[in-house]
Length: 203
Image (cartoon, rainbow, N blue to C red):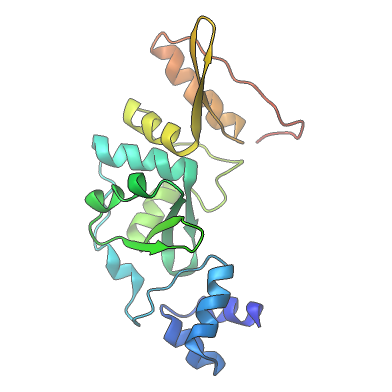
């Protein structure tokens, strides 16, 4: 059943639509799609209308969220959905200030999903390297900025106290992208290094 729901969701923009195609209860459809981490609006309206224009123009706020999505976001081909899942609910709520029409979905485990559907924005993000399968092949095609790096760190970074000061780390499975970040830091006269921990061959 779960595979049938997944296939039906590809052609639908609401839970009601999927339920009608499968002659199933809407609540059942919601349960299966939740397991698949697929979120539809449920109202029957097209999710592409959630964000009419691409909000990621070049400014410090958009660059920050580009970095955050590059680290901890997901692009799905289903309804061109763009989503972020985080345990830091208060922080993730800030994206509502950037994209007022974004949808928020609270999960039972205390996590929050922020998502919206926009074909224009989806294609723009994919075009600059934030693709659906970005984890090991991320190549950012715009200049890296401090605001982008700040979003990247908030999404997938951490720090620890180490002599003689504080050590900051950003984790990425893409060696190419790690070197992009390293080159940016070097250009800013900041000493840094790229450490490979995975024995598999990075891309």
